Amino acid sequence: MKALVLSGGRGTRLRPITHTRAKQLIPVANQPVLFYGLKAIAEAGIKQVGIVVGDTAEEIKQAVGDGEKFGLQVTYIYQQEPLGLAHAVLVSKKFLGSEPFVMYLGDNLLKSGVRKLVEQFNREKANSRILLAKVKNPSQFGVAELKGDKVVRLVEKPKKPKSDLALVGVYIFDKNIHQAVAAIKPSARGELEITDAIQWLIDQGKKVCWQVVDGWWKDTGKVEDLLEANRMILDELEEKIEGKLDSESKIEFRVRIEKGAVIKRSRIRGPVIIGPGTVIEDSYIGPFTSISENCLIRSAEIEHSIIMAESKIENLSQRLSDSLIGRNAVIRCSKQKPGAFRLIIGDRSEVDLV
Image (tube, rainbow, N blue to C red):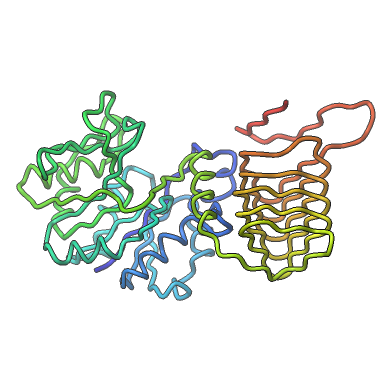
């Protein structure tokens, strides 16, 4: 069995972060989202992985390399335009051949991984196996309609959903999917939908099995989902203190401080992860916060946030919360008089001042 990991797309819902960074490489608990999927694939015993890339191809290649560090053999497949998930399968036909494969959306997180899914598929010899999850907003997803124990209909982002069972971004297909993606037509939004391809399999009498996802699943396409995924992963964090901590600092609950990090006169209340080379002085870092490498946090309070590498946060008069801060960002409260907000804000940025 092979795997196909989708890492194209423009990440418009995560701008301005994705103006300069692939959405699949945004860190959750200080590790790119994409890496969780690749590790899950390796744990399932799959070795050959095709990664579908687009405009951010070079950045993805630089981060993943040849896949050796994950125990994988990676082939990169270029998709000129993000024309749908089924289109990604279409352009990957040469790599996939006639073998069955796991298709994994690179911005999805799945607690249970894919090993059990692969084992179940191999036992039942189905043509496809899909994962479903109950959601509060099914109109934002592909939705499955069931009759008894069978999938009878799949609809992409229906205006009036007949079910609350959303398609999770992990699928398994056999070679019949190639005929399906070649047979369907673009949807109203101009994309070849994987829901239409699976519906084609159903209409042709192929065996499409399903299961409800075990544990949690997150599509990290929006800021609030990234923060929630960060919270979920940190909630299972193993404590490890490898950085330097002075006698005036206090650690509470589960905290991981990487080598080279320095904590001075601060309180860290976990779950929190602090990356190598980061310096925290005279600050409070609250639960569910990830601070990446080589950051400087001074005289600030932060909680439930993701702070990316090389950022500086200093002299804040109020607590920073529920925030996603990009690489090399600078946030500070100046003591200059007269007092004023002084901002340098890029395209599609959002600032909430209170």
